[in-house]
Image 1 (tube, one colour):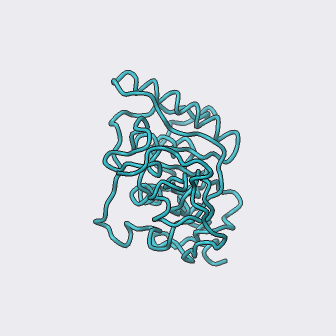
Image 2: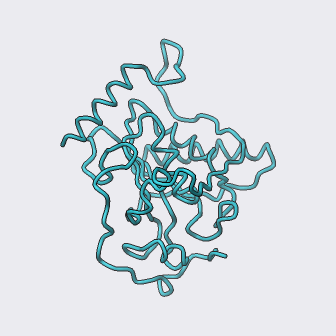
Length: 240
């Protein structure tokens, strides 16, 4: 059974100054895992339980350039997986997502986030129990903050009508992101039948993002022009 109370600064592990080694390229997309990223791309950081399945879900999303598994939200610098699982770092398992907003919006990613886990469970996701499995949105700027809060409020209303409890998701400015060990990066690309802890509530999240008025009907998939432009950006970045 994992720890379900956050450690105090005195209880937290001291950590280390050395950084975790990071693989040069994403196993599934071939894109880099570390900056610099294309300047017109944006970054999202979400915690929704075990990062193995969460990372795969996002890297398989059209418009996502790269993803990485990591740790954030605690106090121990440069933690290891074992330390995070001890509950003595304060960190949770998170996924860093670099995406092209011309192809997939932050609002789209938020909808995936809410619908792919149960944000009412506090320090757990299903049978995965511990502070490292709590739900979190770490925003990059004020626009992301506003969208995160609006989507939380909309989803809370949807959950309330179906008998679910209060959302416990932590929403705050993105703290430092620590890359997880190489063996945790794109874990389910290496082991497709490995453990995936993603389980949603079955309740859909209303769309709350602000969009400009459309003059044509919305498409369910990105246009061929957008998809081609996104692939060109990936190819250019991979050659750098």
